[in-house]
Length: 335
Image (cartoon, rainbow, N blue to C red; front, side, top):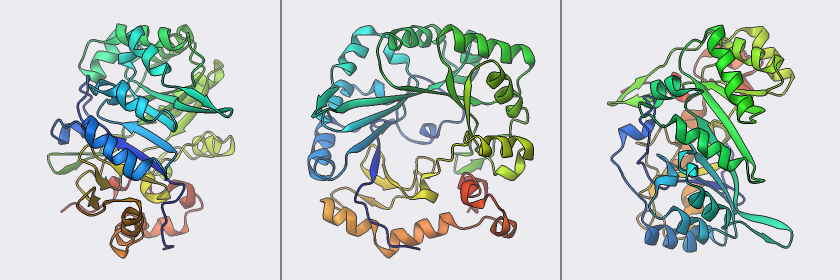
């Protein structure tokens, strides 16, 4: 494995584990409700991020429910900030306005809140409630209406938790077009850890039907598989690969970014929140120490362990380089 170096890397910070929804598969339910304090974030930002990292991804829980969310954005107004959210807080116009005001242009370069990625939890009141167990579909609709008034890059995604019939696919299309969403990422539920055991959600067999249906109606669709590619229909996989509609985002296999918990613990990814590779002020106090830790044999061994082939047949697979066995929780050995 090549020696890892953190220059030019991005950083994902879980600024809080609390959320305003209760989706069944969310990893945050395995964690206590924690919030990264403003003072701790500021200290970490000035010590680690400010002079060394330009791209910051804010994740949770639900990052926008952090009590100091706007203040945190203001700290980062000279960085590229990407937000992963369910979007509900943007139903409040004043809150959205305050977020937009943190954006600025420096020498023709846009900084601050650069892009928003919204995970849609439903396409009508019933589907939203079924997924999130919270009756806030109206808030989502109001949030999208508010966002559409700004020239702000937004990516929408939708997780398929159940098989869909034709009527439900029509409802999804109607929702997308009603709110002027013409590009979307669809995926199935990835494995998650619950009560120290790995849950393996079923693969949605007709995900390709939704993909093809939306494409036929003028929606540009990307697919993020959360199962090994060999488990999907080969024609579908060949189609999305050929048309460059496949999104593979395993941070462990690409080894491209830091993940930090709201306790400023360095972890491989959100799903492997229990694999703590180091903690700010305990194992690293500055950028040089973080770089040294990241390049250490200890962390290289962790990534090597999680980046290997899950099965012998994977070694000969022609799409291994883009599949990577999918989420490692599919094949990691439970202890």
